[in-house]
Image (cartoon, rainbow, N blue to C red; front, top):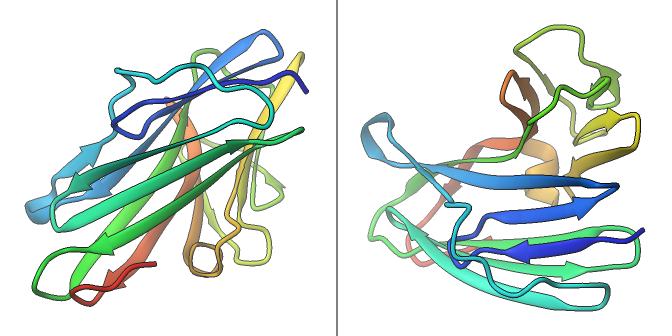
Length: 174
């Protein structure tokens, strides 16, 4: 698979494959119902097979370190979330692929998504996958915590995976 990948200094990712460009953003919860969303700007150099990049950003009481590696057939992303605050903090995380053109099919947790918006909770199949005639793209939770907490979702503007149950004590990370 020919992949061209870029990581933004603020955490967003672009993946070019099958003649399409996908933008993947992450948003994290802030106090009072607010969100911090990674910006799809200030990208580092393009990465090819066997290359990697790392960036760090902050969101409220959290520091997130993202390590990205381009493999032969996929992009592997490892996020480490650290609570830099002084109290127990809850952190909602959402990783979303923006949809510029509607896919022909979307699968959430292995099942075909038939309505908008929709979501699915399934630790046994923690994935969201969209298919177009010329390619497909999926997000899969590999980390034990994200697998157990996983919510796969589809909205009019994108699809992805999320953790609505993460909480970290002061000075800890996952």
